[in-house]
Amino acid sequence: MSQTEFGTHIQDNEIKVSPTAASQMAGLVKSADDDIEGIRVYVTGGGCSGMTYGMTYAERVGQLDKVLEADGFKLVVDAVALGYLKGCDIDYVEDGLNASFVFNNVFKSVGGSGSCGGCGGH
Image (tube, rainbow, N blue to C red):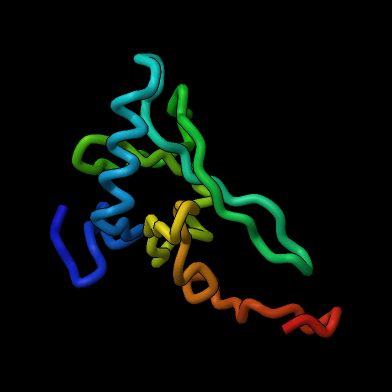
């Protein structure tokens, strides 16, 4: 993996992970059960409210999954989700007592605007 101004590139610029997010992911995998193969990134939803991006533990890797190797962990992404995640940046943000993974540039990667014209949302 190579360093960029944002953070760590994971294979072919498909998904970028900040150093802070990478450190958190590696820690999660290290502290997980031995049967965990990595971190699964997924996409759900659609329609007016848009897509939802999230992560969970990957207990197994399927034939249609792509495994993106990183230092200390693996990201597992199915082919459909990867199409929505290309060009996305995953960061880890701490704000007081709140801390979470954040998906940036997801609309840029799929050509969306982030608004819903059908319901008047902005």
